[in-house]
Length: 446
Image 1 (cartoon, rainbow, N blue to C red):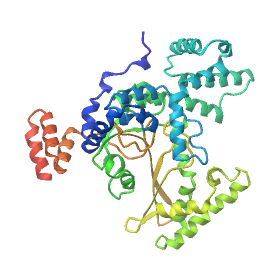
Image 2 (image 1 turned 135 degrees about the vertical axis):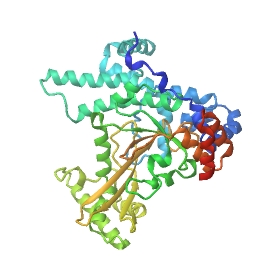
Image 3 (image 1 turned 120 degrees about the vertical axis):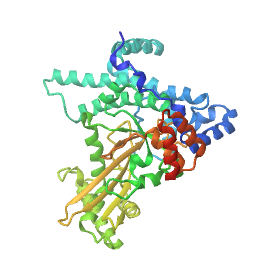
Image 4 (image 1 turned 60 degrees about the horizontal axis):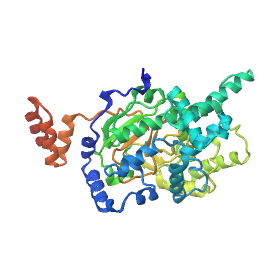
């Protein structure tokens, strides 16, 4: 009998090709590029470490995606100090090529030293047999579970309580290895295991569009600056899917904490409270004042002042951080909202890694600070900002009500955008009496 968590509900599957054709510009660009360069073969793609989504309309894409699905979501050294974008691309190539073998050796060394005398092929076969008993899908997932169980055994032997920072980290690592499988299944094949996804910390994907996900206005919970970051590749009506990061094992709390303890956020909060927001010099003065106070507390090597007063170890140029803040901080005098957009230095969520934070702040007459935070990660497997990604998905922390886009609204949006062929195709897909009325409404609203 199959494990319940391995069962994929048919209703969770959607026609992914048809969905992505709705993003006409991205879809056409993908096909055009692949047509032009497809004759050169797959080696160039792998060598450049382009994310596997960019190759899915060619024969190499699914194969590379299948390979990536077996890898650990953690790439050692990826966020170390001084690692350049070129270094990261090379790390991803190495990770893709060797991670599976590395995970096998970790298992042998830490959990099955008796296998060391056998060949790699025999080691792999025996470990796979054990994985099948437990329902583990990858060597990385299996190793993460063994690491956690070993920690539990050691604590019991010592008569110590099971818990603490290390245990939380081990459990988080296991959950995120499992989530990686679900994310790749979703972005590649439009299917997912609902139970496994939610149990490990992500909500079911919801298909929506950019403006519904992030907001396009200037309300307190709108984060329209996120839209401008993605530019022409993801306009407001572009179809995307969204999963919320749940607070399973404290994931949501940890990722929000990574934002609020960041120096950029701390400068923003200090500026909103104490600076003359109409005076750039006053804003810069108070931003500098806050980050230098964090540097002084960090230099003592003590954490007694609280983690919100400690600079991240990767920050070695405080003035550069001040310049970054001055570039990102915006104040709207009309609404009274100050906003910042940045990528936090702390990375507590292994699956999403580096995220983007958009923070809106406002103060009341009694100087009480209000804030609205939207944290988002554009999911990818091998490389950031993949221009050919077949399905665009974001994992988010937000209080926004992200609604599904109805077929009715899709027709209206298409007419508004004067995409007549697409609009009529969508309209004909709607059956019943309402189709003619819907077309008349759409034409009137355009």
